[in-house]
Each structure stands twice: as C-alpha cells, then as structure tokens.
Figure (cartoon, rainbow, N blue to C red):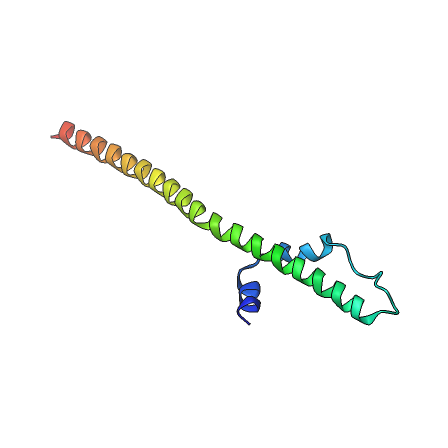
Amino acid sequence: MLEIRIHCKFLLQNFNHLEDFISSIGYLPLNNNAKAIEIKNKRFKIIQEAKRHWLNYFLNIYPIKIREYEQQYQNEFIKLESLFSNNNDNMMNDTTMLN
C-alpha cells in the first residue's frame, strides 16, 4: 500500500515509461501457465526495483537542488540590496546638493 502511494505521489510521469523499455512479455509460453506467471512476476519485480532506484536517486537530488535555489536566491537578494543601497545613496546625494 505504501509503495502504491509513493508511486502515485512522487514518481514522475516518465517513470511509467520504464515499462516500455523493459521488453514486453507477449511471447510467453502458451502451454505453461506457471512459467508465464513466473516471467510476469520477474518482470514486475525488475520494474519495481528500477523505480525504487530512480525514486531514491531523485529524492537524493532534491536537497542539492534546494541548496542551489537557496544560493540563487541569496545572490539575487544581495544584488537587490546593492541596487537599493546605490539608489538610496544617490537620493541622499541629490538631497544634499539641493540644500
């Protein structure tokens, strides 16, 4: 149940394309149901394991991206403060000249 919730909430849509990359099982033996079920189950397990790895990878990337965005924010904030400071200095100089 937890795995289904994680799959629905966190995995990107292109994670679903993984099933297209792993060969389909249309060539299963018709006379051996047990073997067909075993092959389907193995394929399903491979897909689920790959999705777990991808999810783990993406979850490990998020803190790095957050730090990058935080750094970008800080840089822009410093630029904005500098711009306001320069404008404020210019206004003070203009006011002083008028007096």
